[in-house]
Image (cartoon, rainbow, N blue to C red):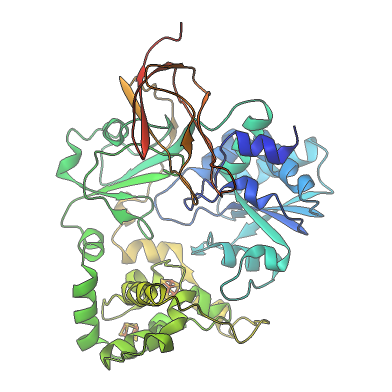
Length: 445
Ligand code: SF4
Ligand code: SF4
């Protein structure tokens, strides 16, 4: 079987959070394959530790994907502050005889270094055009955990687990390997918190993650981190403001200083994303949604809302509001330019991670979250059929059927973008719903 089909059968998706099916990235040829090891979300500690713990597997997974798409070079992007990991990766690349093919490049400690378009520019000096993808400039980007999963798939193991950092205002910060389908409460318990309901929990990183309404869900392949904070923490209060409230405040209080634009990472890459203009449209009650098409250039990194705006307003949320309106009306941004130049002041306007962490009130919690071995012994696992971008997977098992750990339980629907889903334990299928399969964990006879 060729690599594309191995990756497809193993249900590999982008482990960086977006969940794009990885096999779809392998259908094109590209000049570069880039490993996104930036992990720029504050407090999350997955990729940096995986690169340290599994360097050979990650290097081999990246190499295999790179050779498959006929990339002439593979580049690992990792922040320069992870000096020991960088030394290790360089040693292992040399020991594996890949020095002519692969190199490690050090990224600045800025936010959002892991935004695909920022990463492409930092590693290749190329700029992905507006509303486009890295492939347009000859690059395919995969995440460090995705490369590890490719390596595992080549050894016959599909994706049945994910690595998660549990961090924040908790007694014990840690990073754990969690079988897909385990309850989130089971994971949160590992950080020494008795009752997670006493906390607000962010699903993902503090910048782009959202505050969960409740923690009664289950881990998916996309789960990367949970950040627990007191309910009255600044970040929770800010993230909990409704879209309606954000619009009302923005309408009256925006002073048009344009800091949100001047520090916007997409604007700094030369794109036309200018959130202050969107805020102006809001203030003036401009009803012509079509004129606000630039809102579609926002990657929702949240830098404007959580760092740049001196008035503590919500430009990202307002962008999102206009994005929704544009989508409802079927309007798509039409780029005027195709060649982009970074703004001349970009180097002076990058957001240092340390200052960002301080700004969002997380300095006290910016500590290691060591990779820790935990054995999860759930009674049931609930495995979602849609853990990825695309169509939900179609069950291929029946109620009452015994399944083995690693067995495919749902496949990609015909002619659709999607990802296969596998059982994370031996057990018996007890329920099949529209969106998940419930498995009672037990022995396979
Ligand atoms: S930074 Fe804040 S106050 Fe300044 S233009 Fe943007 S939204 Fe308005
Ligand atoms: S969230 Fe704000 S800073 Fe980030 S891309 Fe969108 S407009 Fe720019």
